Length: 104
Image (cartoon, rainbow, N blue to C red; front, side, top):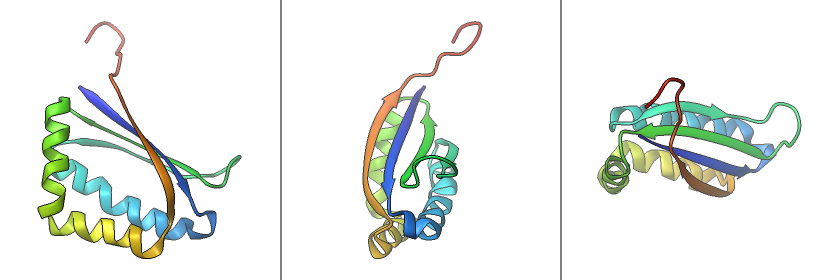
C-alpha cells in the first residue's frame, strides 16, 4: 500500500472554495481505486495550510489513477474549480507506506 500525503498552501480567504474542491476529489479517488482518508482544513494555528491523505494498493495503481485523470470529465471539472478560484497557492506531494500494529 502507498499513501499520498498532500500539503497545500491555500488562500485563507478562499477556504470555502478549497473545501468545495476537496469535496469533489474524495469520491473521485474512491471511484478510481483509492481510499481517500479525507482533507484536513485549518482550524487553529496556521490559516493557510491544508492536508489530504489517500491510499492506493500500490504505486502502480496510483500511477494508473493519475493517467486516467486527463480523460475523466469529473476530474477535469475538479481541476478547473481549483484553477478558476485560485484557492490553492501551492502544494507538495509525498508518498508514504503505512505501518500497522501487528504486521503488514
